[in-house]
Length: 146
Image (cartoon, rainbow, N blue to C red; front, side, top):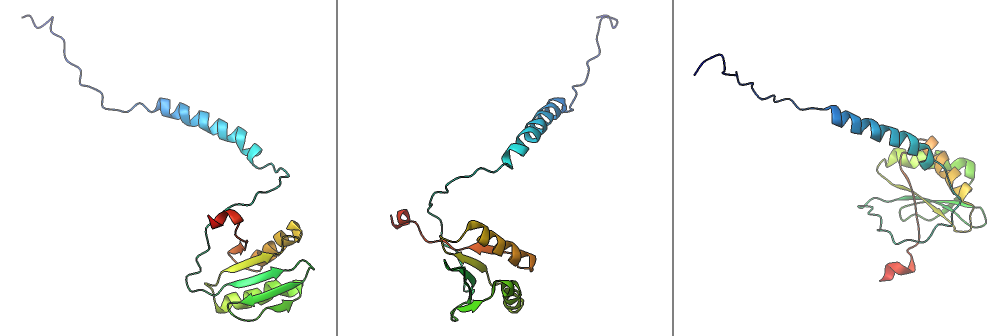
């Protein structure tokens, strides 16, 4: 065989072509940029009742802030008796308890007849006072009995 007709074999290229992945990522970026503003819009809805899991307190006494239908505020820690508290005093009173018991969960127990805005305002004031985690207490739905 003549060496002039012989081709040199090229070694296979072992590089990954990332251009298609970049195209996919750019398309996803555009999709998320277009849909993100739509997700932040709020609608007025009538929320349904739902079956939820019970909260595990793991031997921690919760701090419960209650708002009754008459607009009165009550504070309770663990097995202690409920005591009436003025709305302006709640953040400082809860913060004092949280300082002594940092692992105690703070739960808001709002009557279903209380305006939603009142409950949200209370939760916001608690978080502004330095309470990191604020939860809501609910009553189990009748469907939970199944």
